[in-house]
Image (cartoon, rainbow, N blue to C red; front, side, top):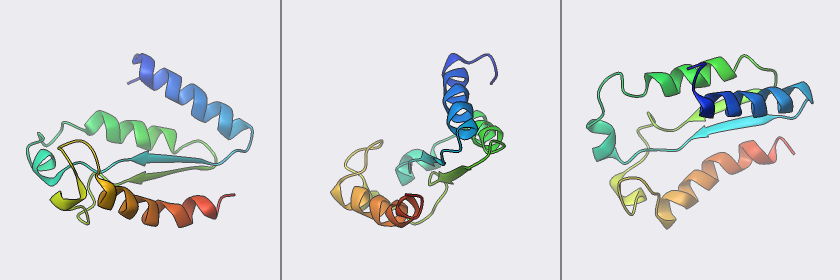
Length: 102
């Protein structure tokens, strides 16, 4: 993952924020249940490794909703995007956590 430009940019942002004592919340949005069921078993390994790696920095937390079973097909308007119900659900889950940081 170290040679990926997106990863390097993300790590730069995380390390800069962390070194300035700014809390970081990394969010992995949910995937439609049908799309999730069609993924290969190792398809998101690099994503998971990236989150694990970035959590080594101070004040970094990660919320990975990809594997959460609380998301239903009714929470999406297509295979990649949350609909209004899904966005409201995500905000009600994430909101209190973000509010506690400010």
